[in-house]
Structure formats: structure tokens, C-alpha cells
Length: 207
Image 1: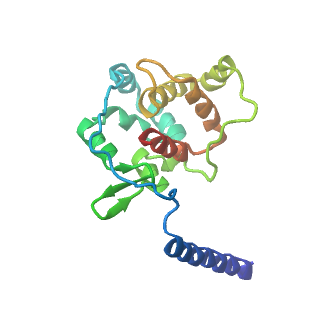
Image 2: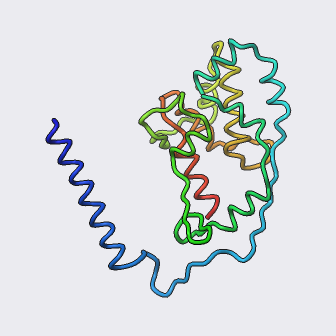
């Protein structure tokens, strides 16, 4: 067992050495003649859903219901109180380089990573080793809603969490929850982590 582990470590080191040598020899992977540069100006429209009703619902719950939510979905309700800085978003988009999928500030490159998103979204309580992927046989929208809401005491907790994911984490249209979000949410009870999907959505949106 121990030798097998050491072999894997050596293999990883060999891959890293090969990767660094290839990068130095051939440069980056952009097409020949392509010039990568940042935008001169970026226009960002920051329009948010009204979250007042969700805040009022959360404030009405007692500690027992809130603990039930935390144990199932982590600390998502804190997102309801975060103020979106439109100037910060504009700056981030301005310094996003789609060619390399990273932020470029002067001579430094920054890339958002899963660990940072896990801390940002406070998902450590529901952290697992399985990432979300869309099911092969996707149930109908009605069946997904029935599976999500159920017919038990967790119903209001599940609906509230679905609202946070649809209106805060993955907002597509004001006042509406995208059906794609229900696909992700329907899989959360399989103990998958949504963090990698949220990170991927950031890359997709910035590009």
C-alpha cells in the first residue's frame, strides 16, 4: 500500500516536471498570432432580485428550524445580507482575461479556486467528495419539485433553500428560478457538493 502511494507521488512529480518543461519550451496554448489583452472598458448591469421576503421568512423561523437548514444546506442564508458592489464587479470583469481564464492585476495572475469558493459559500458542512453532474435520466419538472419539496417537515426548509439557489446563487431572470437550478438541487440530497458547479458558472459568466 505504501509503495503504491509513493509511486503515485513520483508520477505526479513527473507530470509536473513535464508540464513545466513543455510550458517553457512551447509557451502558452493560444493560437499563433493571437494577442491576449484586457478590455479597455467593461459595462456591467447589476440587477438583483428582491430578497426582502426571504429575509422575513428566515427571521420568523425558530432556532430548531434554522439548525435543520444549516445541517442540510450549510450557511447559505448569510448570502441574503451581502451587498453586491457594482463597482467591484466592474473591476473584476475589467481585469478578467478570457484567453487564460484568470484575473490579471499588473504582473500577477489570480484564479478563483474551489477551496476559496467553499469558504466564501460556507459549504464546509455539506462538503463531500462527489461533485454535481446532471443525471442521465432527468425526471420531469413536476417530479423534481415533488422530490425537492417532499411531504414532510423539511418542506419549508427545502423550498427556502431552492429559492436561495435560484434567486441569489444562480439568478437568471428577475423573480424566477431557472429549471436548470432544480436539476442541481434535486441532486443535493445525494450528498454532492455544488461548489464546483458554482465556480464553473463564474468562469462561464465572466467569459
